[in-house]
Amino acid sequence: MLVAAMKEDDVNIWGDGSTFKGNDIERFYRYGLLTNPALKIYKPWLDQLFIDELGGRAEMSAFMTQHGFGYKMSAEKAYSTDSNMLGATHEAKDLENLNSGIRIVNPIMGVAFWKDDVVVKAEEVSVRFEEGMPVALNGKTFANPVDLMMEANRIGGRHGLGMSDQIENRIIEAKSRGIYEAPGLALLHIAYERLVTGIHNEDTIEQYRMNGLKLGRLLYQGRWFDPQAIMLRETAQRWIASAITGEVTVELRRGNDYSLLNTESHNLTYKPERLSMEKVEDAPFSPADRIGQLTMRNLDIVDTRDKLMTYTKTGLLAPGATPVLPKPKGD
Image (cartoon, rainbow, N blue to C red; front, side, top):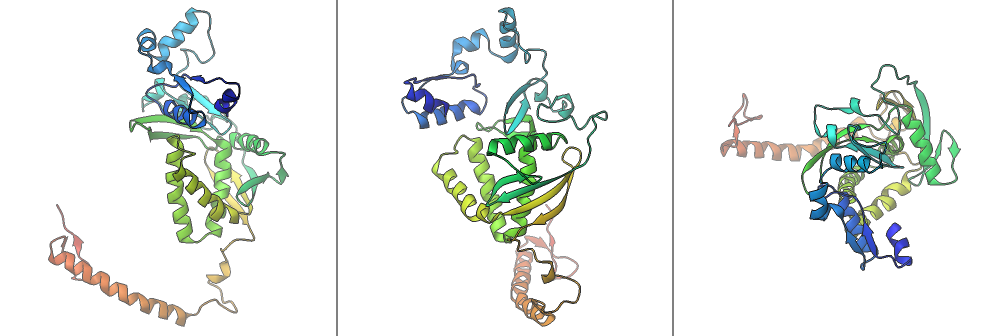
């Protein structure tokens, strides 16, 4: 959006402070040129003169302080923080060491739930979705998605929900470590996933989660507008989200400790009467039906047994106590 606005004013030069070791330098580069092919990009962290003079966060903090530009996130802070409405990440400095954990972080979106003197009371929260979109929290609707997200952040933040310690693979395949906050997204995710599992069938859920992993990586790489990402997004919106209408009630406690209290949706395929252990009228299937289904399994049971015996004969498996169940052959 910023590059598009700049283009309207005939401003075709972009600069930012993303480092050559991180992900943002590539994300800004890709999105900038996708929006404005004529964009000229200057990256201080790709300028050797800048590197030679400053070269690191500590040097830059000292430079700013020496020149009268002291700021609250300067050298005394034990880590670096980036944030937006959806979440925050704390990384670098002391957090580069794996023996420094979440306890050195001062959360900016919620409470430090690990501290004994922080009072966190259990709270029931209802989240309502319509065709995949969150529309209400505790029965309250909002003028726009931003207001809903801000309220979700406040609710989740009261409990320290959505904080995590992650080791991740950056775009350049080097590993980094960060402490993340996402209280609102965590709350919405808990409720959304509950509806997904109650509404869609097993194969659909499996494909949805596989696609989600791929889409998440594409987003991480700055490829949100690439064709492969658009395809996955359209699939999730059309075939998954369109059926996600309902309400989930959650009890939030401390940190990521919660319980699901209720799930309601006209689209649920969870129907307890199908598997009830009580005697019911008009049962969907009978013992005789299950006998027939189990009998059909004999075909692949025989095939599996034959394969195991073949693997035993070729030496891939060592014979077990019985020829039916070979044991894996040791090295």
